[in-house]
Image (cartoon, rainbow, N blue to C red):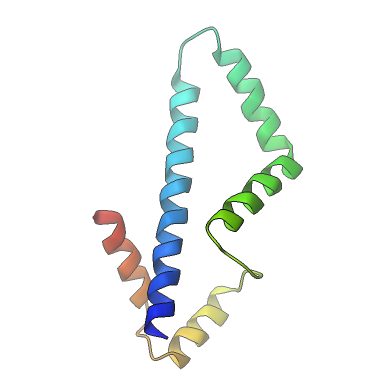
Length: 101
């Protein structure tokens, strides 16, 4: 069980790094003062408005990171963590530590 939780924690950390990278790219694109900015803004607007495109991209990302199943709520996660013998916020501390590395 410990190895499984460690693997899940590592996978989640990879997803968070990828999301942070995408956010940074979006910030850099929105700050660019080039003539391409208008096109970029249109692309970003299309992306945010096209939920099908977003879903497809996220599905591919989850598949690549081997994330399967339906999301669970925070209460269910806390219940499962307690059953597994984890302390409250134990995974959060691991994620914060992984971000700092």
